[in-house]
Length: 479
Figure (tube, rainbow, N blue to C red):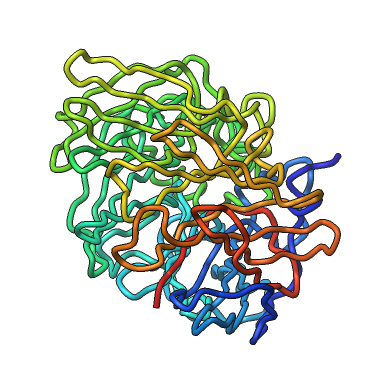
């Protein structure tokens, strides 16, 4: 049986590179001093196409170091877990790994408090990396936030703190809002009650509020038990979890067994649940569970908001909306074209106004990170037909003019997420570059492509020795 998430540029690469002094076409702007990093799934061992889910592949981080107009190096490294180290014949020296540690952190990579962090969600362990992308060990923010974290923290541009919402099926009907201070320690943790056990991939942050997306993709007991519990224990495990999930914390013995046995070749245990109410919650930043106001929305799924901001007594949410998720396609996101929508939460009237900003299929939305939680004019996303594979174009949204500019990269090109880097600390919102990996099917190699953010014209291209498989999220980490 074929699996699109193991074919073409979804297929894993089979080696790690360390390449110095890379060739560049065009030029690298002198103000770019740092690393462009991107994470994604890259199975180390052979997997079964019938059961492999894109989200469960071993994590691999790719990075390019830019300085003084040069591309100094390209490195790609599997994120080591204790199990992966054993498979590679290496000695694990990273210490204990709390949370589900059998899956390598494969979703995002950020810099915070002088550390490089490979991130994942769902109760899975995140890992700290060196500047050269070798694994140091599990990340628990110096013991202040044990267990799993999230793939999508948001840095407040004013304070430098990381705000996040984390989920894990073992918490029952709760998710956790946390704040990591600029020194890398958790200063706040708040449990928020939700309807059941949703896959809460991301959230939104404004200057006043935290916004929760409690949407109908939920933990599926049948799949989790089949994937992780021996056959003679499946009936009691299923009964226990079905009775308790969404009401109280799952019993420790069941949780422990699932933590140990969920593997990269297991069915992904989250499914579309048409009986689950679709709603969003708005909580003051310093509020608690009792302060959350919930608002109904039309059933859908949101992986990624573009940004959010306060507008008087309303909260404006620009999001990429999927009509469904993991309903008919169970191995990755491919349930119809995701669109760019705006949800305006009227806190006085108590309802959400939903409108379509752009009906082109798209994903991986980004804005200037200096404007997270603040009004923004420009946003950037990747054109896609079904929510997974790129259709070879980058979209630039001018939300002030309600216009869209499209940059095509040619036949056979596949475009990854692009991030914005300003030309200086106080540069205008559109004054800088966009950068991301672009795969060329003709050469079977990828470039780190640098575009002028205003015009979308190519400034430079750093040529890599191999391809970067289709993956998830990246960030610019300045020196």
